[in-house]
Amino acid sequence: MKKLIIIAVALTAFATTVSAQKLGHVNFEEVITMLPERAAAEKEVQDLQKKLEERLSTMIQTYQTKVQAYEADQAMSPAMKTSAAGEISDLQRRIQEFQQTAVTEIETKQNELMGVMLERVRTAASAVGKSGNFSYIFDSSSNGSLLYAAGEDVTPMVKKELGI
Image 1 (tube, rainbow, N blue to C red):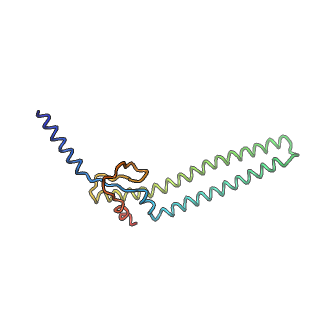
Image 2 (tube, helix red, strand yellow):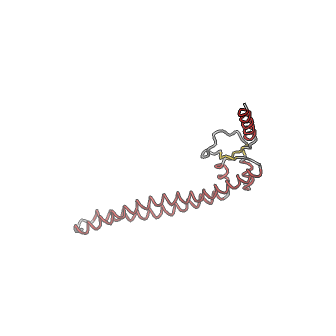
Image 3 (cartoon, rainbow, N blue to C red):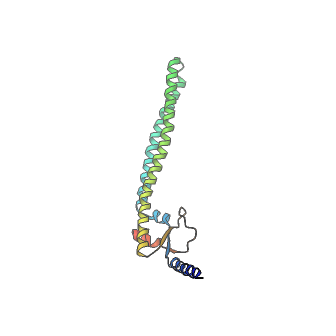
């Protein structure tokens, strides 16, 4: 009986603690889209993409020129044909490698810039959480893990903290 009373008191204390927690949620995606540096970050990624596309275009033009020359030159000796075919094959391989590297470079740049903005929003959400005595603040955006938004929406407070 004594154990039962102790367990009941412990459960009551736990329930009181849980019910006293203050929960909030922030739509990180919404806040990030409103950050002033977002436009500059998008432009930086677009500029990088354009630069890489221009480089790829130059490589493809060189490849096409070599293929046309190879196909047009009927007087080429077998050794020269082998050498030219090797050059064309090597250029094709380099183009494929460049495409893969370019995709990775663009993704890396996007992740780097997004990471800076995401960290800024997280810092602001933490500041709001501390100042508002929240036990937890969840991400309510589509990439977040919030399943049910019963807590307070603190998105406006985070925006205010960021000055947007």
